[in-house]
View (cartoon, one colour):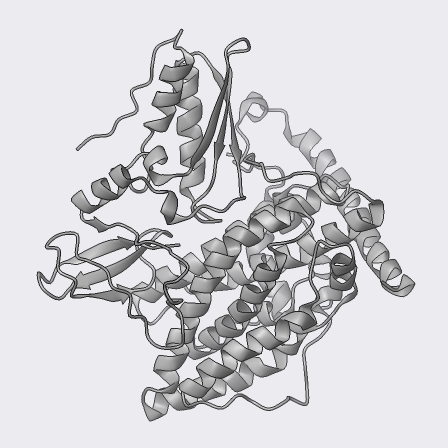
Length: 175
Length: 314
């Protein structure tokens, strides 16, 4: 599956520019776009000045992908004939609840367990016992999975293993 | 707040500013000598240009701004220095998963520090960037607690330190969600979720090690004892926190004690360990810039590249 942000040509209108920015893939989880991920807050286009202001909310405070995302947005805007200003908006803080349904499906298809719901009535996972979150294997669908590592290949993921198909997989952490 | 406290903060900030402007002049002199090559003029600067949008209408009045600046600086210093210590674990942790975990915790803290230091530089009127604050201040100008600067020891020590630090930060950021400074409130909203996860990670290791083998139990207990003298400093109401709390931007550290102690005691009890009784010696002075021996070495390692090549960009 490819999700490419084909940069539009000069003279592009507001709608096309918005769509092109929304289609930029996340550099660390390239199967989903920054819109799927829910970090794209606002795209404000000024046709007169040919400028665009993009508000992005980071997933984690120290997420190293933010710089790459900013550069990609600037590149896409420049190709379309706009000067971009990318601003980081901290509040309200990003939550995995902002991830789109399409984004969750794409994650699952690529072998990453999507984040679960973060409803307030779910008892806090911390407690003081060893973690017992229930995560379904994205490969075989079994609920018999266990956590191997609390922190995975990127800040937003943990590492798990399926007890049924025995495959290890990444889990997008629910925050 | 007391007049005495106000004077101390003002004096502290004035000292920081004077030292900063001296150094910036020195740097400019050196910059002038070096900026002869044409490539220097066109080279791109390090990417620290990300605009932090949450900078909203901040505190209005002067003493409030002063208090907020100093407060952001000390919170940022705690996060920065602990991030530096945690980074030392990469390739040295007992498992590769823990290399990842400790690096990730450090990365979260570094992200928090970047916003907090940037905000401190905006508010204190010196116009210093996050890099200026991280790389060009001397030991006496750092306001972190002693706990975070202590040398890396065994893994049990790190988990004991992380348990206390993240239990403290969890309470801190929960309280700062309603800060009158929008940047602080924004950092808090993000950080409260992150430190929750750090606290969970440390809690689970303390449980495993404490309630593990007799050898791991013994070492985990030793680690708690070793960390104990550095805990109280986190919860001391220093002049800066008091001023920030009065200005409505911060919270009193002493108000965080019950919540943090509640969590730590629960973990320690369940791990079949004993919370050390009050220690005869306690660390103090970090908030005023008085540090322990390991701090200078930490700064030397963290700052030497930036100081050896002033103004270098790539």
